[in-house]
Length: 125
Image (cartoon, rainbow, N blue to C red; front, side, top):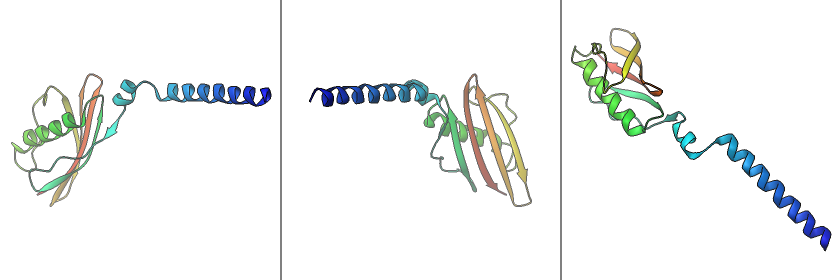
């Protein structure tokens, strides 16, 4: 009987230590929240669609707001236009795009310190 109690106590301590080590690998809840996350994309206001939205150290809501604000900035210069402002919602944004006669495929990276919002879109022309 004593052997069984010792074995149960040893097993419990081992599982507790493993759980603590696993929790340390993941980190605190705040650290997990700052990790990159894929978010639901907002509805595209024009002819086309957002294909992805990834945020880091910001909420998905902020990412969606920024994607839409960048769209409005970009389309002020026409459907194939580019955003010429230095900042959008206080973020610095950089766009890489490929295009053909009928569409644009773009990837926009917006940064503000360590915060990141990356979205991709397809704009029909």
